[in-house]
Image (cartoon, rainbow, N blue to C red; front, top):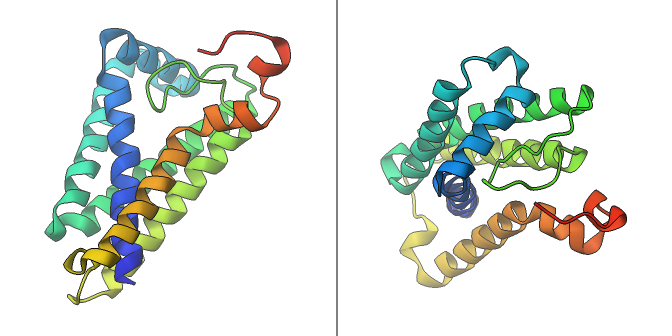
Length: 187
């Protein structure tokens, strides 16, 4: 179970790190995220500025909590709460047929699609499973105390994070995305 915890820490930590960096890498990225929020979550209109700051702050807290051994359970729990909310918001936008990119990792990207909802649901499952494993594990040896095991768990977590963050690019490469089939430039 410790391997699941360590892989989850690296996987979710990197995903949330990329999310934070993507949103705050410049004024345009943050503005794009805030603007997308207004369309993705209509109930937030008029309050998207403070909520956007709160979301990015909470994502940064997840990264920090997953990096510190004594706060890992809190990091997984906060990640799960955020991912449940993100999944619900994207599912709602998909139901309303809202044609807007989520700006989950900053830049434009593709409009919200089922793959984004499934990505977030998968991340929610990963955070929940890692939280349960963390809560069931009392002390014990973690993969970080054995270099070979740590390299494997770090590699697995980093690979999963890369696939998650690059989902739109992979969909474009291997499938018929809107941009590929219509000849539009990607955002």
